[in-house]
Length: 542
Image (tube, rainbow, N blue to C red; front, top):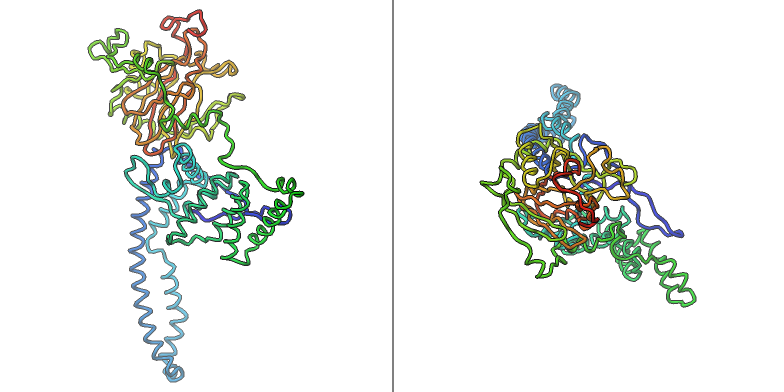
């Protein structure tokens, strides 16, 4: 983990509290690695090259140490003899000369040998590669992703720290230092709920005897303040006293102890209860959230709350579909499955081959960039914490496989894709997600797609280009539907009624990826060109 940054003191009425960390981001050649697993795989190759280079460096250094060791053994024997009779030893003019020579030139040569880089390849390689390393933003983003997964999938810190996750192939665990760093990230966000959870986990692992250089005093310092900020004064006082048992001279701990005891005394005095209540923070639980349907969204991601009456379920079928007599599918119809009735969501099985998937990923990967959203007020494209992925746009003329895919979408849906947006390929990063949103422009966004000149997004076609071991479902929060990724399949739904009005039941989200790597590609089909393919109806909700 990276070394701690310097921090400033936060005080309250003369009593010092835990410092607020200041994170500095260093400009790097590439950023946002954490938003795409596909790009993170490149870092593994980089690290492998560096390890190979490091081994070469170690071999060269070992050879150098052997030379130094021989030199030291020779001098040790010489010094052992000379120190017994210094004057007699130096009485020999050759010894006197060689002493001058050794100290003037030979020790300098030894110094140069010690300082010499015996493997220029490692240092130069490291220097070159460092500009492509993840930065503070990547490390913080990955830490926030772990905390997001913890919340979304109801994972306790011990489960996450031990790496006991469903579907894992390469189990990994968090050290006490790792847990401490996660707590610090939460602390910088004034998220004292998660600060407490992860500082307690770090402390448990240290108390359990984990070999670590982590200082209990530092952990207790953060933990006590986080607990106080959530209004649990008794626990904060207990933690502060434990801190002072380990370090009686701790300045901030002593100040906090006096302040906590002062508040406790005020609480004991009924006449001062109102004043003491104003001194004690009362924020508890997870921080306030911008997303109104957060609880429902996370339940759906966990596979909870997905409900459909048996009567509605009986109306869902699997069938062979010929694309409305399309020449492409008459002899080999595609497999169509109803996933949901209202809105009508259908899945097409075996609609994309492994070869096509690999080709699309090959074309897209070098061009993946942090996914953006359109600001509903300004219309400007910008990154957002609620969309963690990277994407690339592929045009039909770039490769025959893209043209073939576009044609297939048109034949299956019966919609004109010449006015559709380019094929968007997306790869999700650590805890990659896209929180609940609409694909179509609402009435309060009249200019959402004005510059395209093709009208609103009438429909969404979504390819799943990988299986996901755990998490990563597409959920529709308004109706309680959950569609899980399955490689080679695609799901399709209409965003607009035939009247042209938006279907607000299509509000959906991409749940955080818990374990695995999620690749998708999608086609947003627009209104223009569909006038005679999907005729408008008079009723708004038809």
